[in-house]
Image (tube, rainbow, N blue to C red; front, side, top):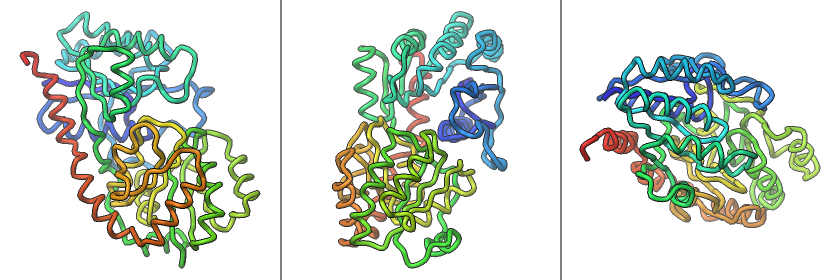
Length: 375
C-alpha cells in the first residue's frame, strides 16, 4: 500500500513528531510510506516556545518533504499536487488542533478529488481542552473530507461520536514511545543530575495552565512533611515561567524543586525518567497524554488526575494512582502513600506487564484494516 503521512515531523520537534517518526518506521516494514510536513508549522506570534525545530541533532530523524506553510494556502495546493503525483492509496493525518483544520481539510479534498486515496485521521483531540474561536468550524471543515478515524482513548471516542455520529472509527491505544533509548540505573541518573539522598518526583513536558503544575506545587509542602523528596520540573514554559518560580518561593519549597525550563533533546529525556521514582501528571483537563507512554517506556509508575483518558492508561493501585483534579491534598496523599507503602517495586512490575498492550503493531494492523477497500 502506498501511504502518505501528513503532520509534524523531522526536523520539527515534539511528541507528534516523535509519534510520526515511529509510525513511519513501523508502517514502512510492509508498505511504501512517505511523510509530508511543514516548512512553517506556526507563525512566531502563535508559538510560545523558543524553537520549533529539534535541537542538537536527531538520531531518529526520518525523511520528509517540508511543503506546507500552515498560514499560506498556496502551499496547501502545492503540497496536494505533490501528494497527488505519488498516487497514494491512503492519506494519514495526525489531528490534534483545529488551527490545522483548514490546511488539512483542503489538502484532503484536493487529493481525494484527483486520486482514489482514502483519508484517515488519527485524532488526539476533537475539540481541544483549551478552547479557541473557530474550533468547531475548522474541525467540521477538516472532518468533512475524512473517510476513517482512529481514536486512542475512550474520551476522544465519546467526543467524536458526539461531534460526528456514525463515522467509520476504530480504537487503537496510543503506543509506547520507543524513541528515547534505554533506561539507565537510577543511581547513575540521579548522580548525573546532582541529586543525592532524596526521593524523586518528575513533572515532564510543556508547562501550560491545563497541565496543573500549580496543583503539584501546592501539594509539595504536605509531601515534604513526610518525605525528603526532590521535584524535577522539566520542560519549556508556555505559560509564564516567573509566576511558577514566584509560587515556589512563596511556598518555601525552593530547595526541593529543580526547574529545567528548556526543551529536552531526545538523547537527554532518558536521564530524567531514569532518575525518577514516579511521574506526576496533575492535569486539570486532558484527553490523553503521551507522557504516560514515555513513563511506561522507562517502566515508571504514574500518579495522574482523573481527567480525559488518563485513568484508562494509569490503572489505579496497579500502575500508579488516580486522584481528583485540582486537589493538592489528594495529590499529596497519593505521593505519600506511594512512598509510605513502598509501592514502587510492585508498580514497576505491573507497568512492565501493562505496557505490552501498547504496541505499534496493533496500530499498524488497525491502519491496514482501513486500507482493505473490500472489507
